[in-house]
Length: 420
Image (cartoon, rainbow, N blue to C red; front, side):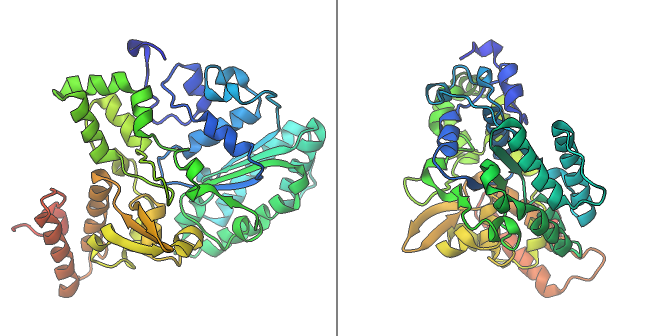
């Protein structure tokens, strides 16, 4: 580990290569990464909330498949990987694909053009995206003599942004057209990894890949993203100490504050390990301050779309139960508000018994973020229209209940009340 004065924290950095080349602090997840790749399951899906390190994980996988052992020096994977076999990698970042059929097709066409240039592929004019994807996968395998690693990051971004718009069905149609190739080209593929936040089961990624392994609830991968208490101790001890000194706290008091605000996520039903939100934690250590970093980084776009369907009594969600069949397999568009709030990080697993998950808020930051977003939305979603007195009373009643909890969560002006 570098000396404290030489260390830099990777605030917002999603590139494994940049972190390793520029001596940023790095929480070593490479043993988990190696186990994921080498467990004998080709098709894998991981759901985690936004800002939880999914893109960094994808970049780590890409670097591994590229055989860049030099960037893994000193990490746990060096004791596990012996061959460092290089594989062709096709990586798609669907967060860049917009939210319409046109923008998705444009992004995929651009991404496929880069791959075609790499392998000298000349497709005939008018070739479909599916045909181009198919040709790229097969050619990459044939030219290199190695099967292909395919990494699809933030697969659901266009579907999130287009949901409840006229463009949504056309967007899902593009997915069904293009990604059905993944199953057809099985013999040319080494590993397929897909990340997202929410699950849209009607697209071919889930309906065609019936052998897709959803690792989102698997205990061995519960901490593949995020940071555990042990990892804070192992990798960020100097930063915790410096944060405490800057604020007049002991190290123990600093850890309590970090835990209260950023810890509490659980992603499996047994032997639940506490996981901190990495974005908020690293920002807090860098700033030596406790703030609501996660919410201010941009609210999940679907949240306000769900407001109309949510029960006004949001406090009920802090102790809500959901069937395992719903939380583990259901489509976000039909699974209810609890499912969406879990997938997007506003709720987490608190317990499990007899086919039921108990959900609740992971920490103070998330509780505050939800209420600061939802309350104004409930009060202002029909700005310019006359809000019914009944709706107004419901919003104020919720605000009163929250204020009575003494958590300082209510901005009464945003609720629409100038005098209490």
